[in-house]
Length: 296
Ligand code: GLU
Image 1 (cartoon, rainbow, N blue to C red):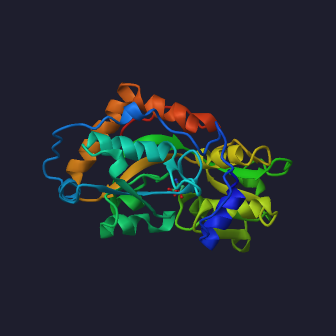
Image 2: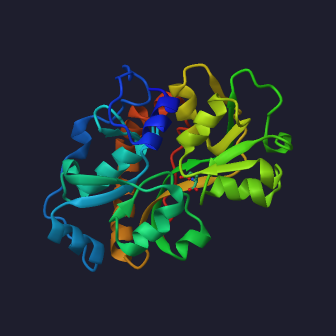
């Protein structure tokens, strides 16, 4: 898989693409199917979202599609894979619905809150940092993973070693994300040197083309791109934030939030979380630290 190719496909909307995924690459990973055994007779009393899912008989789940190892849609097979995708499948199975029934919907960072508020998705799993501002609009189960903001640069770059070395450099990130806010709020580089797109793969294309000096977002995301680009890019490796990933839910649906927290806790306790991690993020070398669920 080449991120540059992926970005081109996303930009042009072209469907045909030569297959280039290979065994063991971060694009074709997944947890063993047995992990998603479908629970029976599930009840989530007082959850309007669960009622909606039951009436529909299927789920609509918001995800990313251009983040290898986390949320990735193979352009040739249209199959989704990654840690976030498997977490979405796990939740579906434990709610009593065959993960095959999930309709994945790509929602970029800037559109997540509104998608949940509108009810366009039942829940959202896509590198979605839990924070106070977002909690005013949506609910979060989790965290199910904790990442940290980092920098992706060309393999041979030596002058970018952390955020304080970004002055005068062109930095790319995504609209509506926490990392772009951090770069702006701390004046790590000048406003005219900040480029923003809807998805990180577009930034990676700019980096490969030499049009920007660094891409910034969570280390887990950047490691997936570095692994996919086979020796062309590297992650600086000095994180400068904490990004606890939550499963986004409609704000008022506390019953579903509690239920999803139960599902996540059980997966941490019974080894399922570990198996999902090993089959996805673990392959690109992202942190293996288990999170602590934060119920509210
Ligand atoms: N975790 C960060 C955020 O939620 C960055 C990754 C993303 O944009 O999804 O803003």
